[in-house]
Image: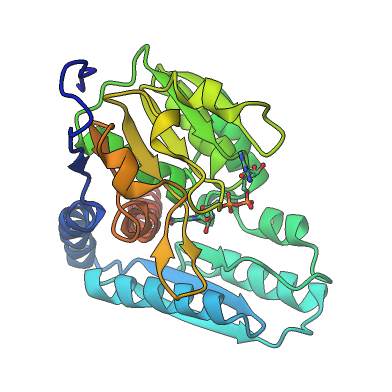
Length: 297
Ligand code: NAD
């Protein structure tokens, strides 16, 4: 567990939380579980649906497919034109729901405006919803019986766990309240016993919240939003943000150099939360295959 440092002056340098190394070690364990399933004649299968030509989405899907292959998960991608109808998309999801070789279904977001995203996500079978975006899985975060946790918040939990952070009674502040990152992260950390505040774009005086955080999770999509004056000395800072600057650099939402002099530990961008997001997708897919195999046995 982290202690608050009060006597180290401004030159304190935070420990860098290495998401790449954690992802690598988790993926070794996942590959072992895939091998154990193979001994029982089961290959975990992930179906990815990509609609339209969004370049960033294509890159994200490419990374997921590559990561699947590296641990032995079989995956395939259905690529549809941007003008696919709602009905055609829903019909394809229904086919995948019924396919016993498929253990996880992922629809890459965002979807074109004419597609009814809520309906698409709710059509995915709950027990194949490895992204954790189905209403049941989101609701389960409140009641504590979710089938799959959403991948990025799950990654945040894993990073904190790997750092030995005991969340019980800690003040956690989550900056960002989206359905896919901020809100589920807050719920998952509250379930671990933390006292959680959620801030968003309408929060007045953000700093008065962030300065109280023993653990600060930032997922706003605003580069440089969190500066050292907003961070409690000795805090653990998890930067979920991914922002491309005009000069091409990728940065998070936190002033990394400045906050590193005040925090006890901090995730870099890139190399922090990002690798965990894909890893938790692999974890959820293997879990799904293990569950299906246990039911069939
Ligand atoms: P979003 O745009 O859906 O939500 C942003 C949230 O931040 C909103 O709740 C908004 O109210 C809040 N916000 C915006 N400006 C703010 C401000 N000035 N002060 C306080 N709150 C503010 O974004 P998202 O999908 O939740 O993603 C957030 C960031 O995380 C983005 O940079 C995104 O690229 C990144 N992201 C990273 C990963 C990963 O794997 N590391 C995964 C998903 C998203």
